[in-house]
Length: 209
Image 1 (cartoon, rainbow, N blue to C red):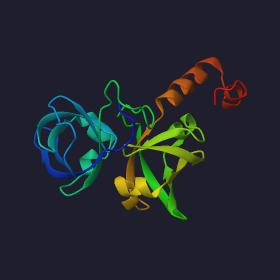
Image 2: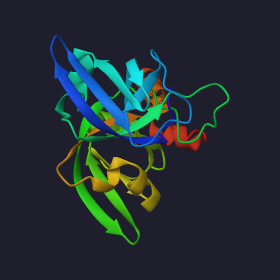
Image 3: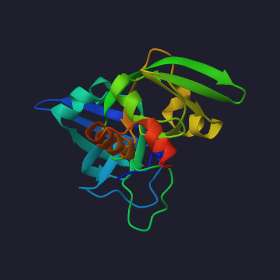
């Protein structure tokens, strides 16, 4: 489990496509606690298992299913990625509950300056948009963000300067693809709603949203 609070920017050092996709990634600075083989690391919002590690570098295998559902297969040496290590018992719970299981690929439709900040409008499809709520949470390339606008098939998020500087979101441009993971709470609510005839209006009236 992760929180969506990015800890390091990584650089892809090697991409191997033998029997399967293998990535080697180096963090931009040393980890406070050394990486360990077998631990989980989120790479652009995708939960991967560390196969080998040395210093700030680690290698991870990517399942074919994961490659087909995410943008990891499009990475090339030199690409920048967002990194977060799995949450440990006793760690501060910032951000929101992030599983590292990408729901779909989205496309940045607009990047609009808003004073010192900027807003990203991301095309995400109707299913993810329907599971999301205004002021709820969304994970974009592993970054926990608050939904500031929403439509039938898109989501809007506002990005502050710190987030822009400490993640890859600051360099994103319109037309680029991103990994999206919806709030797991929203998924359960959506499933319960479908089976019990609940609506967003009923949930709001009851004080749940």
